[in-house]
Amino acid sequence: MPNQSVTITARILSNDEATSQSASIPLNEQPTIAKTSAQDEPMPMPNSKAELIGLYQNKPFEINNSVQAKDMEQVAEQRVALYQNQLRRTEIFYTINPSMRPTYMVQALKTQFVEYEHYQMARALDQRGIIDFDKNEMMWQQLHIVDDLIIDIVHHMPAQQPVGWQLTSVSKNHLKLPTIGRLRDDETVADQASLTSYVLGHFGVMSYTYDRAYFIGHVLGYLFCCYYLAHLSIAYGVTPLPESAVANYKYASLETPKLVRLMHSVDVYCKRRIYQLAILCAQLSCYQLDKYIEKMLITEVNEFDKKQQIEHLDALLMNGIMPDMPDTVDLKDFPGAFGDDGTF
Image (cartoon, rainbow, N blue to C red; front, top):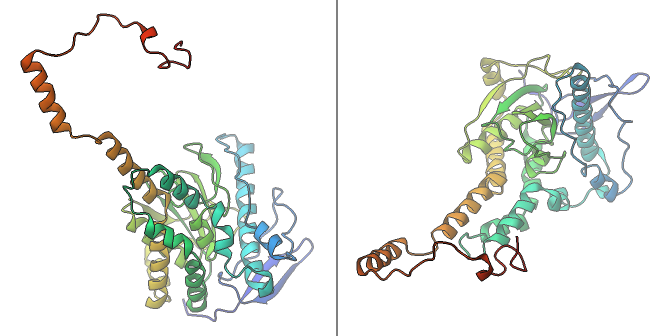
C-alpha cells in the first residue's frame, strides 16, 4: 500500500446527504457510515475547553449477557454508535481551534483513568514501604509526555485505510478498553476511562466484549497493543476481525501476509515511538499494580521469621511446657471478637 500525505479527507454522513471536508487528523481515511437507530444526534462542536473535556467523560454501558436476537441487535447498534462517537470526538479534537484544547488533554483526564485510581489505592496499601512508587509518581506527574509522544507519532505516521482485528489476552480486559455487551465478569469500563483507551483513541476505535478486544483503525494501534502486552508478559493472540463482525462500519480484514505488507509503510521511527508509548502505559497499568499488591500480600503473610517460630515450637514440645488449652472455649472470654458487645 503506497504512502500518502498525513493530511487526509474524513467523510461523515449527514441526515440528508453525505458531505466531506478536509482535515489534518491522525486517523486513517474513514468510510462513510450509515446512522443506526441506537445512535444519538451528531456530536456537536464544543464551544469551550470544558465542553471538549466533557466529550471524554462517559458512563459505562450496562452489561447485557442476553443472547436473544433483539438484545444482540441492540448491542451491535450500540457498538457502531460508540465507534462513530469515538471517531467524531477525535476528529473534533484535531480540527477544533487550538485555544479550545487544554495544553495537555491527558493531564485533564488523568483523575478519571482506572490506572490512576488503582495507583492511588496501591500506594495507600503500601504502609510498609515495600514498593518503590517514586518512579510511578514521577510518571503520573509527567504524564504530558504521553501527549508529546502522540503528537510526534501522528506527525510521522503514514495514512492508511482502517484495518480491523481482534485480540484475546487470557480472557481479561488487560487494556481496559470500553466494555459493551456480554462480559465474563462484572467489570465495566467506560469509554475514555483508561489511559490505554485514550491513547488508542488517537489511532482508531475500539471496544471489549466477553473475552476479546476489537480495534478498527491504523496499524499503529495493533503495534501498541502487542508491545504493551508483551512487556507485561501477558499471553495474547491476534486475528483479523471478520468483515461481518461489525456491521455498518467499513474496514479491511487482513490476513497476516497482508498485515506484514501494511507494516512496510511504517518506518522504524514511528515504531520506536509507539514502543516507548506502550512501555510507559504498561508500567502504569492495573496489571503491573496488581503485581505490586500481590507482593504486599506475600510480605504480610511472611511478616515474621518462620524458621525461628518452628524452632520455638520444637523447644516447647520437647520440654512439655505447652500451655493447657480447655476442651471448649467460652466466647464471652473474647469480647469484641464477634461484635462490639461480644455477641454474634
